[in-house]
Image 1 (cartoon, rainbow, N blue to C red):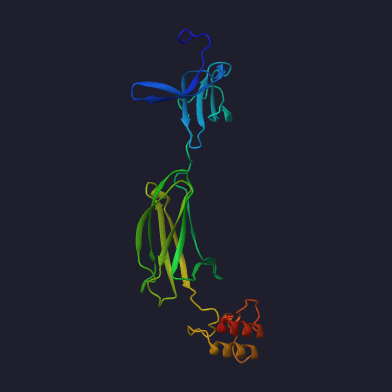
Image 2 (image 1 turned 90 degrees about the horizontal axis):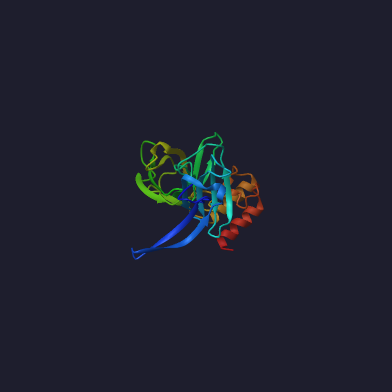
Amino acid sequence: MLMEDSDPISRLRRIRVIDDSYCETEWEYELPANLFGLGMGSVQLLENGNYLLYTFGSGLNQGQPTLREITSNHEVVWNYQGVSYAAWYRGYKIPSLHPDAFSIVVDGYTISDNGSSVVEISDSSLDFTIYNKSGYTQSYQYSFGDSTDGPAMFDYEEGEFFLDPYESTELSFLINNQDLTSTNIALSVWPTYHSYSQKDIFFDVTTNNNLLGDVNFDGFVNVLDIVMVVNIVLGNESELSAADLNSDSFINVLDIVFLVNIILGV
């Protein structure tokens, strides 16, 4: 018997301390008699407002651990009955088994004909998205730059950022050398407190700054491009993929009309 109670029970009780002088019960939940815990048990308030309780039953479930999640309205939403005598002192729910889980996605990623990883930049920046896949707030470190010798397309950068659970952020790196059309980059990202999970990625990077309709690649869209497309249609010039302006896999009079409309602003 416990405190001379012939039918002891365990209960969860949330108490508010008032003016450091007295307490009042804000919420209470009584476990059934068969889940009375003589000496081991715990309760955890979860982020969703529910409560996770653990007890080592000594009634009909004597010698069996029980985990139960209940709502503030006493509704049981999840229950686990352990095997006999598999006792734990406390039981707590953790956000994730993999606190270091994260992923990296890059815009414009593709696979070249030879199987290498290539990123095609259509504007002035190379953009990555970092996803925190764990249930923990994490601090991350990163380093970025060209991995080739010679002139660099990007400035070398190092930095730090924070992500809440399941949050994402973007890392953008501006081109600082517009004269280069290709390079190879290296990006390393790692959780500050889980450096063993560092991800190192390498990409060939190419720029695609061609104007739609700039068939001769002189930086302008004008009548000279029309002349070139006409010559391609007539067979007087070799075919260029840039001349397929309507992307129908054919170079014909429809592309000439398309180009004229671009120039006229139609």
